[in-house]
Length: 146
Image (cartoon, rainbow, N blue to C red; front, side):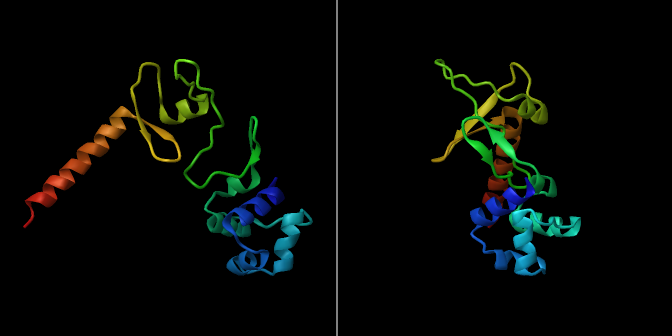
């Protein structure tokens, strides 16, 4: 898993083996051996790699299988990839249990649906309203300043 993730992350970020090796203070040959699985980096080098790739050490060594897609790269630090869901004829989806547990979502809880050109996001109504309240306070505070 590690060797596949290293190749995938390096290519996603557009780095050469030499560029990554330079960033973490090793030779290109040493990095190439990690990508082939001939050797593995020590934990300190894994930490440096995770920083360069914007993921976690755990993310470096795990793969995420997504039904119908295959293996995907590890999610960036602080992000999650929950997999795919199907939209039924009424426009309903089932939020994966791991996501419900992480965000404390329960039946009947209201969510705000946001979107951009790439997709949609669901945010608990309480969190959204708290953010809007803070934004309005900042706007009002700035309006009061000369």
